[in-house]
Length: 194
Image (tube, rainbow, N blue to C red; front, side):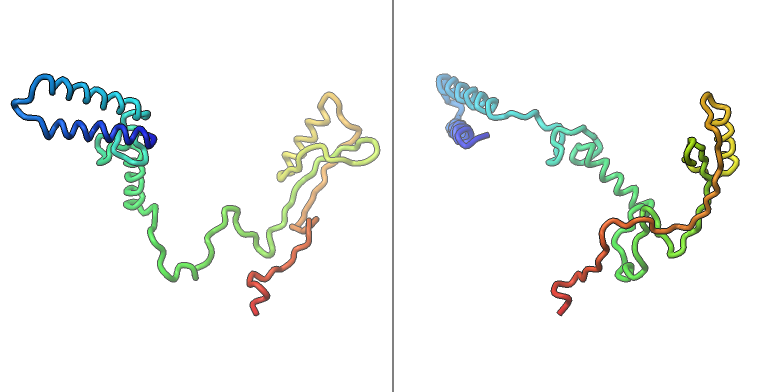
């Protein structure tokens, strides 16, 4: 509703209020017809200014949302949120505020886990074929030797087998192969904490 519409509608409603104050048992029919005309004019103005649908709930966040008759504000979306909060509160899903000494216990667990200083070594089997000049990888490295041997047997029986195949056992520890950029330690305090 813009300012002009609000002003016009306010004037029409104040006029109706004046009609209501002047109404008595002895009011003439001509005056009643005038009140009816003013009422119709005010309703038409109201129809022009209202552009949204009638709210189905009493919720300010979801006025036209789905209705839940059991909710105090009739809003199904807000009531679902409140029920979930009550359930998690009862089942202990949400622990509430942390105690003061909680930060000293350690950081939160990482989604990907923490790599130790000395991780376990890996072992895998690499299926390779001879292409006439050098050995090249011909399949995905396998963790199981028997599976890698079965893969090479299937390759040898295939429609276009290579001259030779080999199975390479790789037993490695983690090592840094390449680093992009130069890691530099940066002091988080401005001006070196002077």
